[in-house]
Length: 231
Image (cartoon, rainbow, N blue to C red; front, side):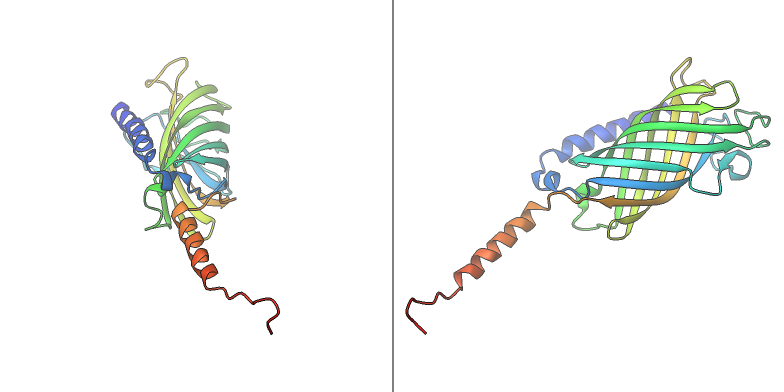
């Protein structure tokens, strides 16, 4: 897991650096704000590498959307996302190697997000993979880690199906930082699937603007001016 986290951080930094020289890409802003609502699954079974897809015994999912997100886009594929999730631990689900916990669950997160959409948008505008890294706070009504500050590493993909409307899939690893790190009951995974809506498209591709101005100049050259006194 530590190696995976290091690789994700390296990819975030490397893509940020590689995106900087492409001014035509950086100026283009696919949106200003993005809002999302999702169904979330909380996997807090206490197993680091096993039982990752043990839906029946480990995943806590509510029947209605339980996560909201707000994303503010900045530049060069970078944005800041804020999210909040409400869920419930069901008695009988595996929570940190125990099936005796139940109760309310909340978390609040703030993450930097890098979207690869900027690197190939002219060729494939319907798919938008991204990586995230940030911090969060988790509250559990029961258990050994009721109040848990976390460091979050994750990623996902948006599939744009109609204009600014998309389908979102996301997974995030949340690692507790106090009182312990790594070997602590504060660690868990969160998976989500839902809808996102992006609004307020910013500056467009400067190449398109240049072509538009160039075409207007050509058409202006073909205008016919009527002489004074003529019919």
